Image 1 (cartoon, helix red, strand yellow):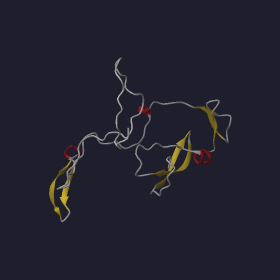
Image 2 (image 1 turned 30 degrees about the vertical axis):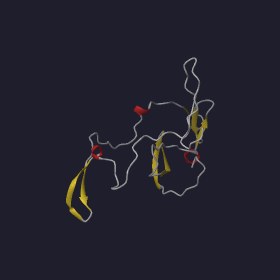
Image 3 (image 1 turned 120 degrees about the vertical axis):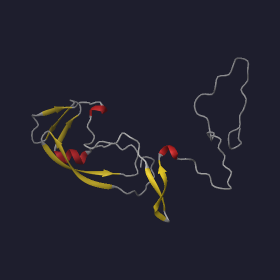
Image 4 (image 1 turned 45 degrees about the horizontal axis):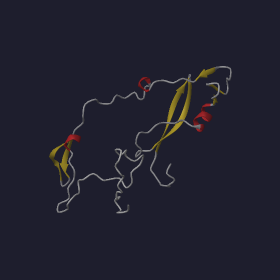
Length: 158
C-alpha cells in the first residue's frame, strides 16, 4: 500500500478482450472488492501484450508491427466515455428485512433514509464533535492591541 504497511487482501481476476484499432488484446484485470473509487490503469504488461510503443514526447503511439501507422494521444471528457454496457437504476432501492430466527417473517423495509445511530443500552455517549489534536495552518489574526492567549490542547499541554 502507499502508506508502507503490508497487508494481504483478496483480489478477483478476469481476462477481458480489449478491442483497439481492430486488434483483440486479451488482458487480465484485477479487482479489489474492498477498494473505493477504483480507477483502471493499464500498465506495461498490457502495452507489451498489445505490442504498443509509446512516443510520449511526440504525443503518439503505434503498434510495434506497423510503426508507420501512428495514432495521436487525445483526451476525452469523462462524460463521453462509455464505461459499461449495463445501465444502472436511477430509482432508490429498498430491501425487505427478515428475522434471522424466522426468515419467512418480514420485519420491515430497509432504506438508507431509515438508518439511525446505534445506542448501546446503559452506555452514555458523548455526542460532541471531536476536537483536532493540533491545529494546522496559520494562527487566527488578533485585533490590534490584544495579546495572544495560550490554549491547552486535548492532552493538557500548553
